[in-house]
Amino acid sequence: MRKIQKNQEPASLTEYKRHNPNHQYKDLIDEQVRQDIRQACAIEQYFLCAYCCKEISGTNVDTMNEHVQPRHHFPNLSMDFNNIVASCTQNGHCDDSKGSQILPLTPLMNECETELEFRLNGKVVAKTERAEQAIEILQLNHQKLCETRKQAIEGFLYIYGLGNPIDVEDDELLASVIDDVYLIENGKMQAFAPIAVNVMRNWINQVQAA
Image 1 (cartoon, rainbow, N blue to C red):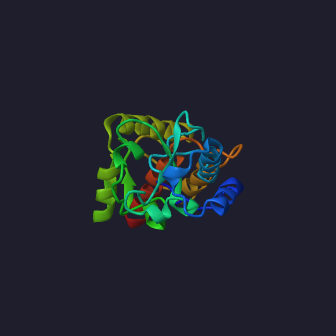
Image 2: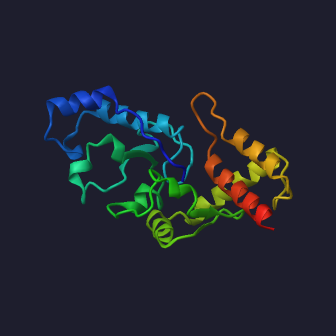
């Protein structure tokens, strides 16, 4: 995960709520408003899934409006843009596995970047109990997802010549690489970039602790 900074809601959603103050998301049948929400979330996430960080298009082909606090439990938040993120629609993980479960660690929290530790093999381990619950709820160690993450991590390490496993002890160099990995081009971040950054930061911590 990468911490998401929520921005202003789409004007079409504001207008819809003004005309329909008692509506919940289930009442929203205007697909254009739904798409405006989807697109706005994708933009503020740099077109990465809020949970697994795979690339998304921001359209209903591969992206859905996901309520961080489930509508089933928090119907009063179903039209709150600050509770909506863009999730991929892959089978077996992210929104597909979350359903109406309450997520204890979310991409709206700063700690989502520190309580999950990603490994070179593509797997993620938890540093806290709530992180363990989040991994289970979102199925972040789904086999296919781990394989895709592993390939992405290897690609980043190869491009920047860091070795695999990482064979660099210059934390300033690694910090510079992290800045490059996080570069935004045409409003988009590279798929799984936050995962690669997590791996590199963990390596920096190990070097500094040695």
